[in-house]
Image (cartoon, rainbow, N blue to C red; front, side, top):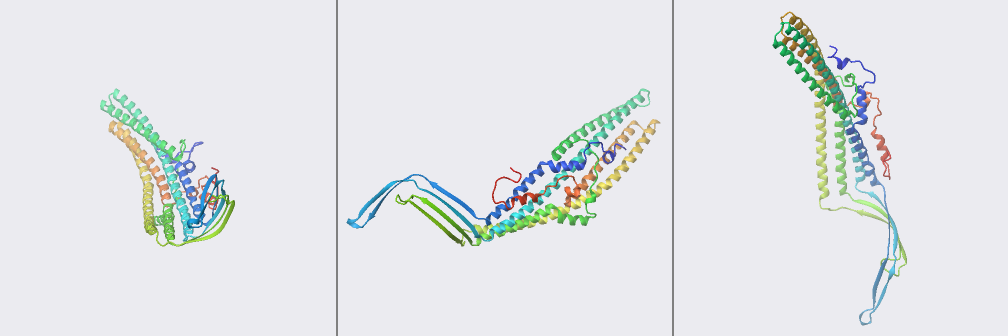
Length: 458
């Protein structure tokens, strides 16, 4: 009984690893999560890119070099016409600058800004989806390893029992109490038990590798884990309502609808007139057109109004395309809600089944243990065979494995339900880890006018 309940009742040894510490390691080290954080920071840059449409564009030009000129001029007409020729070398140079400011562009800058802001919010929701996926994978990997280590321990203990059973059977055979068949049955059971140990070792090794991949550290001594039912709603309808309203997958789909709506408005902006103002100044020394000009300058402030009449029809196609994409995103939102609803109901059913399964398997272990003790006593007085004892022993081992598996499923199901309703986060779980705040980077870059270094100095 001590072996079969090791998964949930084991005492915590010094310096042991807990599920909470494993989740902290995954939250900090998982490469998939860190990659998604970098993607979120990249999406943040879409907002200053859109805001750049409000800002002036400044350019400075300069040129210089050597040239030779030759020109022939005609004066007069007919027979009395005269010709004069001018030629020479000079070194023309010029500097100039222009400032261009867009005044109106069909509200495209405003709509692009709103579109970029919605994209940022959608990406943050996607980041939350990744956080939940990583935390659920970490909890599952932890529990898988804990389960497989417990099963491996059970199988090793079973081999020890079978070895003792084989020794006793051989002793009884030597004194004529049992036949050679009983010895063969005991030997077969021992060989099967050793095979199960090898299988359990392979499963534990695979689980350890998965643990290392998801959490990012080599597993140590794992301790017991408890379910997180206390963070989930108390009924299926409440869980469905919370999930369809707060699951980050639904939130991401909602913001993607906003992005698509703004894309329609941006495309429609191509049908509006545009107005811009440009100021220019240029200073020339010598001339590229005449050897007699020594210097000149020009300065201007000009407004430009452009009214599109017909541009080949591409702008209309882009508007229709954006509207179809908007329709698709609205359908994706409905699909996301349906998916969350199905996941919540499924996770709730698995959690309820896991709770009931623990009670059933523990009762199975108790009954199997009583049956094994009774069969052993009956076998001593010749009322049971060695095969009956071995069968009862294997039944007890299977029942203990079922308890370990049920306890594993119970904890994983509680985390799965918490993820389905959108509450699997460091804040809800109370993990002792600095929470990644995407708003910090967004505020650092939103109003940046210049500079190529990222806020972290790269």
